[in-house]
Image (cartoon, rainbow, N blue to C red; front, side):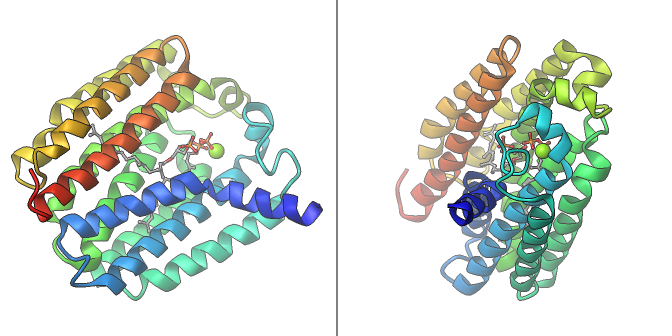
Length: 283
Ligand SMILES: CC(C)=CCC/C(C)=C/CC/C(C)=C/CC/C(C)=C/COC[C@H](O)COP(=O)(O)O
Ligand SMILES: CC(C)=CCC/C(C)=C/CC/C(C)=C/CC/C(C)=C/COP(=O)(O)OP(=O)(O)O
Ligand SMILES: [Mg+2]
């Protein structure tokens, strides 16, 4: 039973939903760059590198955060004892090494993005997380960069830039809300996150303003001709769910950040449907 609990804990450390979601974003980047069918092996390597890097980044985050999580998230794998801190660290290093193994097979721009991202993932928790807004901006960059990484693996990065910016804005919004949710543990650990630096309400007003910009910009991929009209049918509800989530955060940041995540996932689906509609002759 202990072995089953350990394996379950290791899988939990990777945050598999995020691993899959980020991998889909990289695939979308390759898709909008028009390289999936022309370069299937590079697309596969980029998707694999992303999934392994996200799993590694999440595992090392939980390793560094193990004391905060005893307060904020005691049910997580390390605080509940399913995985030892050393076991989590070794697991993260193995995943990072596997991500590098796939990334080095890609074109030089993709290798550069992967190299920057892998360093950022290691540095995030120790050096950036406690800096007001900077830690959030780094995570937002990392999520947005998946589109650039997927595009750089197979072709031109250009079309992926708009998607990267939209994903980064939405992620930055949610990261600020998550810091409001984690205020107690972050204060105990002496972290100076944005809500601690400027106050919870002001941080949420900043998050709301950021998301408003992202929502207003969300039709741009359609207007630029990257997506078919079917994109609007899906992204408009996604925008509405994200706006509802950030509004909900003022009285319940936990529920709000979850709603934001649902809206972001639906927006990622809108990207897939929008590009698919264009590629396969739909609307
Ligand atoms: C306005 C507009 C149309 C925005 C686009 C939104 C979009 C497509 C966002 C992409 C979001 C996404 C699918 C991200 C992948 C999952 C991931 C790796 C997120 C980063 O998570 C960091 C977070 O702090 C982890 O916490 P948790 O999710 O609670 O485990
Ligand atoms: C394209 C390549 C090679 C890599 C992509 C890398 C990506 C997409 C990373 C996604 C973001 C990520 C996994 C960040 C790691 C750190 C992390 C989990 C930040 C959020 O954690 P905390 O701020 O500690 O909050 P919680 O632990 O409570 O969620
Ligand atoms: Mg953490």
